[in-house]
Image (cartoon, helix red, strand yellow):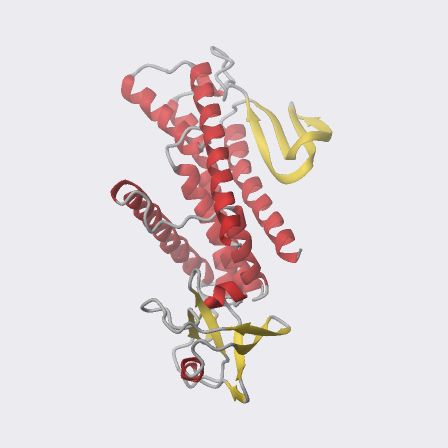
Length: 355
């Protein structure tokens, strides 16, 4: 429940910040804003201030902004989005993506000041041995071992071993291939006993359990350096997300999707569940990465997304002819329906993986 609440709040903030970007730039450029909604309908109550309707809705999940002319209406009206110069429309459309990157910068900067997670360099550290990676479809994944679990003891038969080094785990597991063992882990403030059977034969690079081990520590920077570290982290994360998308597209076209793994809401929930028990620093990093992902995805030239709308504005400038506003609105509606279908398919596949 705690993970669901955390994700609910995090995603709501990401959406709200995104929509606030569109809202404030539209106001700045004196484009008419008809409504800013907190949450999604049905409406609970609303109030009008300076000609803008602020609605508070029953589904408290992010928000939305209604800009006059965005659906092609108001042709010829000075305060309509559709009649504004291309550069103004581009600013309004790009503002949501920009705000998500700004939010990521704020969160990464806060995380740098509080302390960011990283692997300790020395094997002889006093830090506990932790799981820093779990291979898909491995015994560890099937039995519920997670990122961040601290392994302090292992039991098999009449043998019990206190874990001091990473090699203690690998040596113990090698001696019990094909036999059930008990792994004692600390997860947050909880102690858990997880029974698992190491594989006799395992894929190359995974090991019998399918876990990667290390020692997690926290690296802090001075508060005045944190914004610089935050900006660098945003840039590195942005490059990583774009690189991942390029890889996925390449696999889809070259290898018909072989080797591609995409997660939807269920996958995000499972990752958030692992992060939530590790503390505020991990949570900040996680939400910041989600914000960067949201920015990149929204920038893609797909109808219904900001990138798709930007594409139509750029196409207009290249052709020198404005597309019919109502036709463009229909294309975006079709794109939105396709995105919902894709999300449903990805979510279904995520659920299937759990069983």
